[in-house]
Image (cartoon, rainbow, N blue to C red; front, side, top):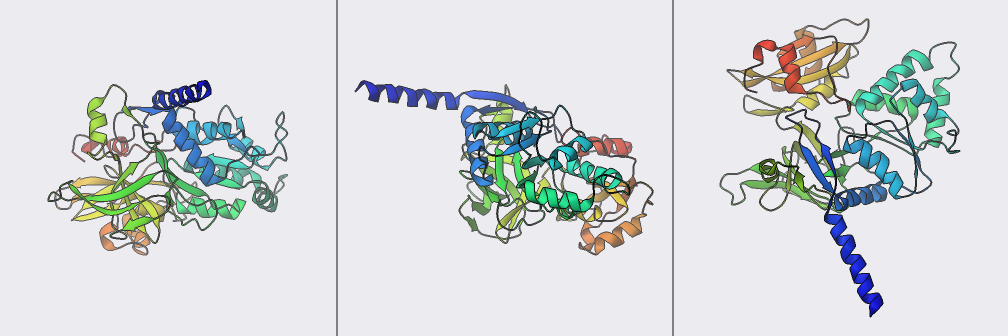
Length: 411
């Protein structure tokens, strides 16, 4: 009897602990003022458990940690997950491209006596690693060559992951050519932790974020003022299956599950606004479902351009612009337009020593992939695109910087 009461007490204590706040992590602030997200011990436990199961984590793994510890990517994915399963986490004080290449290719890490077999980063870091590779590792008379890197990383690394922002396909393709690894893309945010992931084993479709992680439910909805809920469900699914009412139709992405946050610290109004009446978190992202996997179209407020009745994905246009050999960086935004509501503008950065392209040339390039209504009507070349520590672009600030005459106009 005593042992039974004791076990009940422990079970109850654990349940109470899981409901208690574990940390407050601030949103990136790229679409508004940063908000403090309250994550409980239960939220983090559910997130970590899902990643261990989906990505095959074991105590034999060793991951290289180069990400900030004030964002969810660096805290949950690359620190808490390996610690939870007894794996090794090698933390670098800062990102250094040469140092990362050295550690990825080394047979063992000093004082650890293990080699790195997992790596997770953001697209900007992968781009900088590829730039370093081209400029320092494969030029004549260097001590390392492309065959060595390809063979070494193909054999010793079991998984490489990209997240926190959209992965341009040229970077994904080049990384696979250099290392033999097709980067695994996933989707998450501070408020829901990790929600969707491409498979550990199986095809990883470029641009997609796969399917829901264990114990996570997602749905895509579109507004309907005549519905009792205010919306119609386009697709709803979990890690096992999805019920599809309409394919390839963009809508608002909602998430539900044990990894979803309590709300925002000292901001009850924002917390109430963030959840539907039936308990789903409104991510603020637009998504679609096609051929068994989910795609993120972009942030509804800045990455979905509403022009002439069309909803245009800025991320889709960016992917095709980045495939041009003269384009190093780009950001596609919607600018106010009296006739169309918004017009598509491309802000571009050229590769060193390459020419800048005029508007007709840019439109001709994009027209090979996209319909006429998605073509840019404005092109602006700048020296560099400002990004935060995770490589994200604050597009509202970028528009104010590049088009100051529009600073006071409504998006």
